[in-house]
Length: 417
Image 1 (cartoon, rainbow, N blue to C red):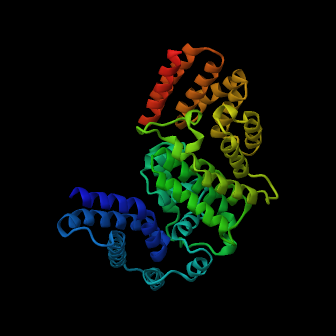
Image 2: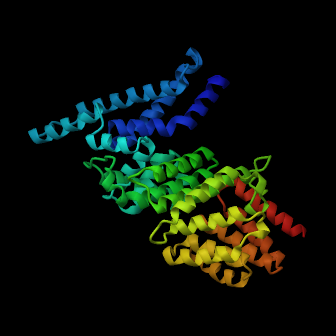
Image 3: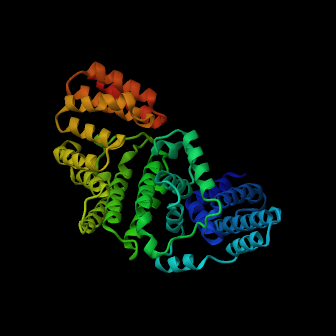
């Protein structure tokens, strides 16, 4: 493929993949999500075959959508004719399933009037109450991001094999279940899983170096907060948190593509407009009648957004937020954040006492972060030799080359002191 055609295809895929797959799944039935993803892959393969010889179409996204649509319909028709004959009741059930080829179900149309967003509808549908909460999130996250299993498994703190098994079991559990977009009154039961999916989608996009996934997570969180049936204080809190984190993405990368840690980020590179939007959503979140983890996480991110410099961060306030968070969520990630805040607030020894159990028994996905946090506790106490050794171990433990480079750079700078 010529360079220009390849670049157009790559840019179009990044910008439109999620919407095209979500639209196909919503139109033909969310039970066919996997087939919609396969149809998208077929469309990309045909673009690779045709665009070099025939030229890039005037509307490449529409071309890919049309080819994927035809591929999915062909697959569904083929599957229909390959099914074995059964009883009259079986035939009636199967014929009803063909209705998904023509139009969405009534409940889908009703929901489309309330929220005309295929990707958000896809997330709500994937968070089916027949599945365990973690499986809901895994299925929705995979559908929304379209990323390989490795980065998704990392944010879910499990192995790729475990994630693959979880997704397979989820799909098996949903065989024979109509995956429909829920009606308005059914939204609250799925809201927590949806919020978790959007939260993790942002972080998996950040970890994978795909900011477009981050922007999409922010867009969907804000769309959900603006939707009358789904509006909730927790949703505004999530939108606030993602906006605060999104504002910092412009400062996360240096001129040579290197990671710039939070302590070294120039605050004038942060997106001030996103910070203002974040505080607007945080104000809306205060209407809550109870405190959720989304409120606390937004409060932590808001404190970082308020600080004019890293050394002016109100760490005691952040530590109080983490104290609240641990009452709501005692899993490994909040415990790690609490220890980091404890060290920055002036008690590195107490932080180390909390980090050692995490290092021994915590999830592998947090090992590099835990080692780096331990290094910081020794650095604050003047034990440079131990801090450098721990940073080197953290660099060896991380899966990400950019993170390893950053950790080794920090180790070298510290050793030089």
